[in-house]
Length: 300
Length: 336
Image 1 (cartoon, helix red, strand yellow):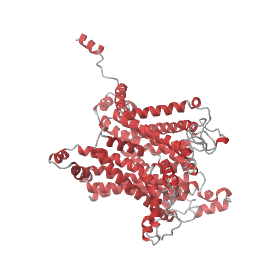
Image 2 (cartoon, chains in turn yellow, red):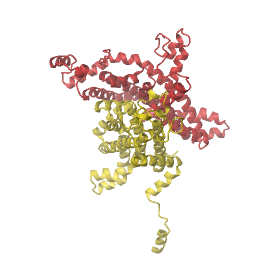
Image 3 (tube, helix red, strand yellow):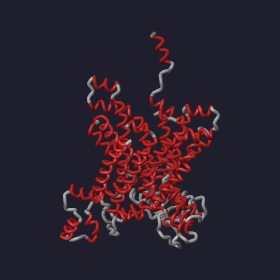
Image 4 (cartoon, chains in turn red, green):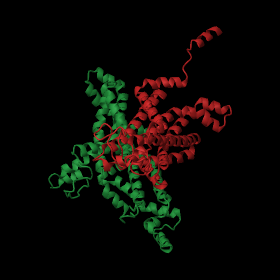
């Protein structure tokens, strides 16, 4: 008997670990892998921006104002993607812009995930009047179009990248609250929770160690989608002048004055937006892959 | 049915009150009081300051102020704009038809392309068509629409010279306002070419505004359709020898439409947010651009009124969709 067991173990029939299993599913989705690769590239470029480019994103080369990209007539390889209206290297600004967008995404996701999950846990676990009040509050936030609410909050806090991130985080709270609340309510009457309760687990242990891990999958999926939406919304706020303030190289705010140059400098208009689109698209592809890997029920 | 209606409306009332509380506090959380805002940089002497505050009822306790604000709303009084001194509600509804026209065209475009695209993708599941439609719709969903607008201007207005860059109609035409919808008004007017001018002004902004709803509708239609196509009655219909297009358009579509209609209803909020960006890029004189301009001008009563009116509209549309849903599908009516 014991020998047989040993053979089984040495033959490595034991199921793969949770991460291994997740990675297997994730890799099946080619789009998700491509998205992951792209985000990794943007992340690395943002981290090592100083090594990748000899220029500063703020340095103005006044002799090279609105220089076209290298492959076009008049373009030089010194500025591969051309320069903007005050002679700053666009490629450099795009690389540094990645820092800002990813930074905003991370701030928004961690803030809304943390606060939203906490509120959702309380709402679902405590129930009663607290739950009703919280859910009505969530309804109010959801009644407002997210960009409009973000605008209102930025109006109070004042423009800026951090304030924009806080505003966007608030508009995303309802999703996390609702998801967490729904899964807590579904989980809390299950046997394993009651068993843990009977064996004397405290409220905090019940909520955070027994229940929470079983609510994580939909939260992770929502967080990955929230990340891309946050980048999109932050860029929109930057574009209308209420997000990152010039001269910071944020992709959205780089487009703020683009309408003026649309007649004579297409490269000023095109590249920052293309970076936003590709980054958001890559994140959404990853999000789809995550959803398939973590939650086979939602697979079509 | 009646109790279902009451229940739905009962849920909306606290939401509405909450929104009024939010807009009420918004203007009070901004540094400086309304009198200082109106005075601007010049400042105002303390006696006059107190006088004006009393005149506006801002010296009363907060609860009384909120009550006055709330009763004001029900009488259609949303305050007056600091910049134009016009009632906010009149400003809003002067500009609203422009936004409504734009949103209406956008949603028509989104439905008339998104719905068939989703159906085709579902029917040709796993084929090249499916991947193309889904790839395009994910791209549309990821699109920063302010950049998309710039790109279309770059291509069609600057590059090809096909469409104008801004406004609702060429300044050469003077069209009498009948409905507030430029497309209809210009059609009714005697001026030759006014209608074409209005149409060419409308086309790019409505495509831009339609992009995200289109992507969402296509994705939703596909997944709803796939769900329905798996059902037994579809197999039966096919087994009876009905043509595939007949099964899809008659048997499947009707049942797949329910979640799609909900999603279309939810797009109203998306359209309103999108209108802020789209109208700004195309200088479209609607409420979205007006809201943003009000923020730049620190015209807070207008911002406050605009947010309130737009959220009320979103609440109202969602309520209508909810109720229609109950009318169409008795299961929902009785379950809740």
